[in-house]
Length: 611
Image (cartoon, rainbow, N blue to C red; front, side, top):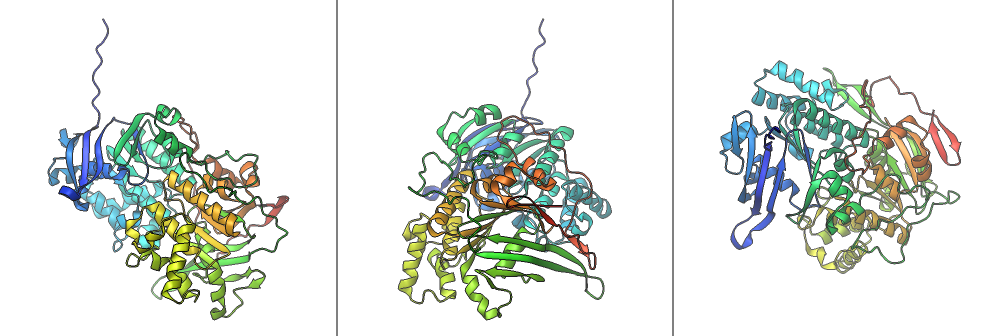
């Protein structure tokens, strides 16, 4: 006689969840009739574009909606609480009950670490508070455990970071602190809202490995919210697709990503840049996005000829940051952010600068834009050494070099209309002087980035993330620059929006012969957009060559490690990468302890590798 199967109850069961913001006729439905189950030791990935309701659903599970003006209008969120020994409906539970569950049994890694960490408390005190509140540890034990988890997420100098403040850490380091805080109480459910968006591929691979290990050891279930389909295919057991607050389709990762049934899911997957898709080609290539037609007749520039005079020549650029300490506040250590960095950028070329967080990519960009003073080195713009000029004469170069920052919302003034923000660089450099000129320029810039001209009267908060990034690109074009520095300009965007913005950048480059310094950690986007690639490690370039040379014939061990860490869209396949081990390298050194310089040797024409 067959043994009857015991019914397995899900750890979390969400039934017919609807969430609204506002009341009456002004109510906006952010989640509409969503249902899903989450089982023990399983990972459910929720995917979709910005505004689809992914993050709102997770905030409903945590009972945090009331703090941002949201209301659950219908549905049940049944959670099997081991702590309370009963099933709890999180939609109707009292605040006291939710407080016991939050952090202890259900924890969340938020997408934006800078707004999630308290700027007036050290990292150590914030982690210790979490451990004291939920696990009753004393100060000494809480600090010891906090250090263990900071080491677990591969933070260099973890002991020093315990006494550091959030603003003293890079974006990637802050994200790792958030992950350490979320997992330090070893919760039953971990909600990860874009947990690896700001991280480099090697650290991302390590974090995903940590989450998988936590799942195995503690039976942790994960709700993984992401727009990175490669990560989703590696991490998820099941996938739920959302669009504009509604359910689209769900099923096993193999079914949804391998054989999508809905047009929207197919469009999402078509926009995912895939490593290796450009093998055998030398020129960049536009994304083919279903339903969105690229500008007719526009193709990206082919490989740039190096016999032209470079737009920009960087020679032995060195930038360091002093760290003071001790009773006399003397300089005790230095961050060797950029050491003897040299490269050229040619007209109409995209040079991608890639590497991990803390490798010095952004420092190089900021030094070129004169936001940071270098220690030594030369920077020649069309043959003229900029650093040798008096400060007042450098302004002409600043006009020709514009910057697109990672966070479009933070780089647009919320009190100014979009039109005012777009023409501000042109006003500063005296290109526009009258109101009529400013209006004409704003309209022209909006047309260049395919946005309606009447958007000039709106404010930044009235735009989506992708639209705001388009506005930042438009503002960078205000002074007719020859070089644009794009610092992680597309890393926080959804795949479909990212594809549109990358296409826009390539189209503008072809029309106006723009040069780009494209700073990023996203190797799949680099393969699509770049002509040449420079790989940075601990402040130095370790390999530089054409895109084809770097991706098809990588020579340096670090370049190979970067490429092998990129998540591949192969549904259900679990990667077998070995976890990073050993001492975590750091660019911070004691005064007088100079790093050994990397000597580049030529392995083929235009391809240089560090010894």
